[in-house]
Length: 81
Image 1 (cartoon, helix red, strand yellow):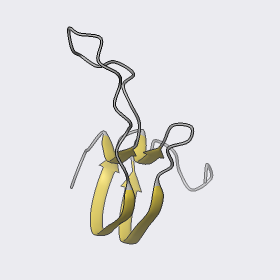
Image 2: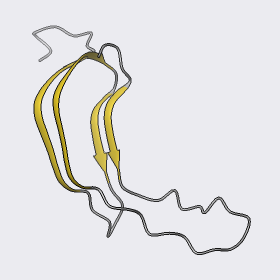
Image 3: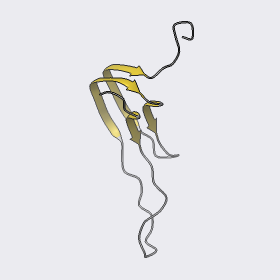
């Protein structure tokens, strides 16, 4: 991949809105568990390379990242590293 804004985004949560006209109760967020992402090559990635987030009491569990080759955008040089 080349020139992507956010390469990987894993999110477990709720938008806190039912998007229904009736007053049905909000659903419990689903599960994010035992996820493996492998063999990813990307360059010129924007501000977010990998973002993994969750909400209180609903964790993201057992995420495995393997063989990742990522290059973020930069404007610096070796002195900035």
